Length: 224
Image 1 (cartoon, rainbow, N blue to C red):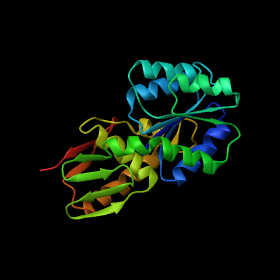
Image 2 (image 1 turned 135 degrees about the vertical axis):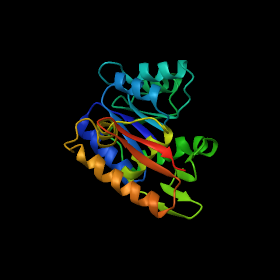
Image 3 (image 1 turned 180 degrees about the horizontal axis):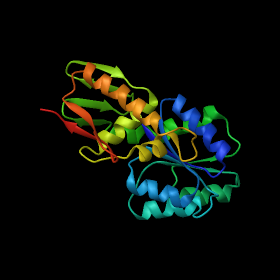
Image 4 (image 1 turned 90 degrees about the vertical axis):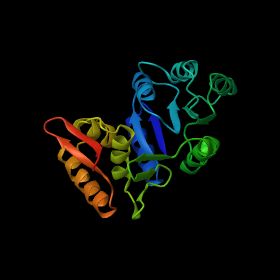
């Protein structure tokens, strides 16, 4: 399950992002409302955790804009404002739930499960290219010959490739998307994870392969 976390307090964003990854969610983290809108325009998410007070574009404006565009993704609004009127304003703007800071991590996880429960039951939770199937709810990768469970970063990388088959995705884009813009990881870590995935595809007898385009990036192609 993929979530978008929009929170301008970077230390809090990193802590929550780590918590969510350890709870088996794939997470994209952004630090302002403009970035949140850009990510929501170009990616599909199962849920959004949205801070109300952010630079560039505030959380309520982000929420109103995506609802105006017909995006019904479940949204949990985070805020330091705990007054009833603030909660009502957030819910009226289209939030599915509202959580005031500071919050207990167990409550955050419970609210995420609750707001995505109905949506998860209705949405497509699998990606398929060739004979390769990726279950987005449990990171399970399978073919008719077998299955295995991917690590969080393996899952995020293969999900990007399977959601955009035949399209070249640069290593830099993968690095920024999966490890984060402020990560100290080097681009060669992408090559390492591509190698891991290629070995798993071979072990499963997949009829798709990750192809490299020199100085451009990687793409997923069906093999003959």
